[in-house]
Image 1 (tube, one colour):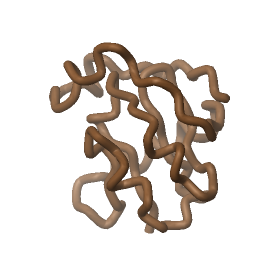
Image 2: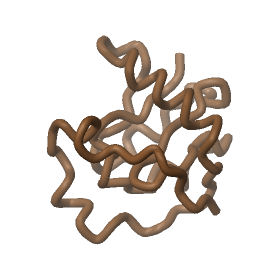
Image 3: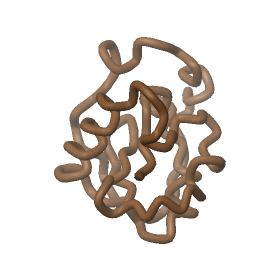
Length: 112
Protein backbone atom coordinates (compact mmCIF):
# COMPACT_ATOMS: atom_id res chain seq x y z
CA UNK A 1 0.00 0.00 0.00
CA UNK A 2 1.01 3.60 -0.57
CA UNK A 3 -0.64 6.95 -0.17
CA UNK A 4 -1.70 8.96 -3.21
CA UNK A 5 -2.18 12.68 -3.78
CA UNK A 6 -5.44 13.28 -5.63
CA UNK A 7 -7.23 16.01 -7.58
CA UNK A 8 -8.06 18.30 -4.69
CA UNK A 9 -4.36 19.15 -4.28
CA UNK A 10 -4.34 20.85 -7.69
CA UNK A 11 -4.16 24.62 -7.14
CA UNK A 12 -4.49 24.12 -3.36
CA UNK A 13 -1.00 22.69 -2.82
CA UNK A 14 -1.00 22.86 0.94
CA UNK A 15 2.28 21.49 2.25
CA UNK A 16 1.45 20.40 5.78
CA UNK A 17 2.03 16.83 4.59
CA UNK A 18 5.62 17.55 3.57
CA UNK A 19 6.50 18.68 7.06
CA UNK A 20 5.43 15.41 8.74
CA UNK A 21 6.70 12.88 6.18
CA UNK A 22 9.46 10.81 7.81
CA UNK A 23 10.92 9.60 4.50
CA UNK A 24 10.63 12.74 2.33
CA UNK A 25 8.65 11.06 -0.45
CA UNK A 26 6.84 14.20 -1.69
CA UNK A 27 7.67 15.77 -5.03
CA UNK A 28 6.63 19.24 -6.13
CA UNK A 29 4.88 20.23 -9.31
CA UNK A 30 3.96 23.75 -10.30
CA UNK A 31 0.49 23.49 -8.77
CA UNK A 32 0.32 20.21 -6.81
CA UNK A 33 2.39 17.64 -4.96
CA UNK A 34 2.77 13.91 -5.58
CA UNK A 35 3.99 10.98 -3.49
CA UNK A 36 6.61 8.58 -4.86
CA UNK A 37 4.91 5.18 -4.35
CA UNK A 38 8.19 3.28 -4.03
CA UNK A 39 9.44 5.61 -1.30
CA UNK A 40 6.24 5.87 0.75
CA UNK A 41 6.40 3.64 3.84
CA UNK A 42 2.63 3.65 4.33
CA UNK A 43 2.82 5.28 7.75
CA UNK A 44 -0.22 7.46 7.03
CA UNK A 45 0.92 10.53 8.98
CA UNK A 46 0.42 12.75 5.91
CA UNK A 47 -3.24 11.93 5.34
CA UNK A 48 -4.75 13.71 8.38
CA UNK A 49 -2.41 16.69 7.89
CA UNK A 50 -3.85 17.63 4.49
CA UNK A 51 -6.39 20.47 4.93
CA UNK A 52 -7.84 19.70 1.49
CA UNK A 53 -8.21 15.95 2.22
CA UNK A 54 -6.35 15.27 -1.03
CA UNK A 55 -4.27 12.35 0.27
CA UNK A 56 -5.82 8.88 0.15
CA UNK A 57 -4.59 5.32 0.71
CA UNK A 58 -4.28 3.44 -2.57
CA UNK A 59 -6.67 0.83 -1.20
CA UNK A 60 -9.58 3.17 -1.89
CA UNK A 61 -11.40 2.47 -5.14
CA UNK A 62 -10.98 4.49 -8.34
CA UNK A 63 -7.49 5.82 -7.61
CA UNK A 64 -5.68 4.12 -10.50
CA UNK A 65 -5.33 7.37 -12.47
CA UNK A 66 -3.91 9.14 -9.44
CA UNK A 67 -1.51 6.34 -8.54
CA UNK A 68 -0.09 6.47 -12.08
CA UNK A 69 0.11 10.27 -12.07
CA UNK A 70 1.92 10.23 -8.71
CA UNK A 71 4.37 7.55 -9.86
CA UNK A 72 5.07 9.24 -13.20
CA UNK A 73 5.63 12.78 -11.94
CA UNK A 74 7.63 11.72 -8.87
CA UNK A 75 10.28 10.61 -11.37
CA UNK A 76 10.70 14.07 -12.89
CA UNK A 77 9.59 16.66 -10.32
CA UNK A 78 11.99 17.81 -7.58
CA UNK A 79 11.85 16.33 -4.12
CA UNK A 80 10.52 18.65 -1.43
CA UNK A 81 11.27 18.27 2.26
CA UNK A 82 10.31 21.66 3.67
CA UNK A 83 6.88 23.20 3.95
CA UNK A 84 6.23 26.32 1.89
CA UNK A 85 3.25 28.65 1.89
CA UNK A 86 0.16 27.51 0.03
CA UNK A 87 -1.02 29.66 -2.89
CA UNK A 88 -2.92 32.76 -1.79
CA UNK A 89 -6.11 31.48 -3.45
CA UNK A 90 -5.83 27.87 -2.18
CA UNK A 91 -9.06 28.05 -0.14
CA UNK A 92 -10.99 29.14 -3.23
CA UNK A 93 -9.85 26.00 -5.10
CA UNK A 94 -10.47 23.56 -2.25
CA UNK A 95 -13.30 21.24 -3.28
CA UNK A 96 -13.53 22.41 -6.89
CA UNK A 97 -14.08 19.44 -9.20
CA UNK A 98 -12.69 18.92 -12.69
CA UNK A 99 -9.27 20.38 -11.87
CA UNK A 100 -7.29 17.56 -13.51
CA UNK A 101 -8.50 18.34 -17.03
CA UNK A 102 -8.77 22.10 -16.64
CA UNK A 103 -5.95 23.14 -14.30
CA UNK A 104 -3.30 20.46 -13.83
CA UNK A 105 0.21 21.57 -14.76
CA UNK A 106 2.87 19.01 -15.70
CA UNK A 107 5.55 21.61 -15.01
CA UNK A 108 7.92 20.97 -12.13
CA UNK A 109 7.90 23.08 -9.01
CA UNK A 110 10.99 24.68 -7.52
CA UNK A 111 11.73 21.96 -4.93
CA UNK A 112 13.59 22.86 -1.76
